[in-house]
Image (cartoon, rainbow, N blue to C red):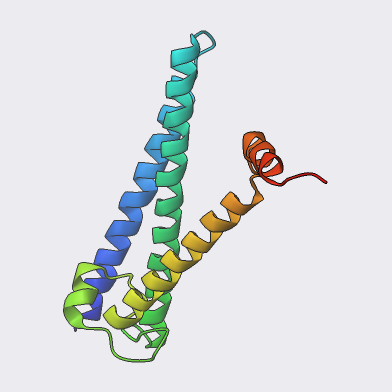
Length: 144
């Protein structure tokens, strides 16, 4: 595995993300206007939300790139953080900032999906039942 080539790829991707974030930030400042209707406000809010999500993904990728660069420097690059196995070269070539081998990555996705489902169920459980449902239950119970 050519670590110098990978380091170069990581640095190029890092620079690309930083430039993209800088341009997006400038565009966001330039687009702010004082007058608009409700549709403009909704569109603007959706744009901000999309920008934030993309920006968040870029920040996460930057963190992972910096982590990969540190691993190259300390000799631990290409080793799965979860199980300690060697990460395949093709996987590292495709995503040079990857932290996990394919098996651990799949396990992490399963856990993440399970946690997300549990969070959604918790949200539904805090919503009180509809008033109509309670009235129907009271009618079904005979009074003494």
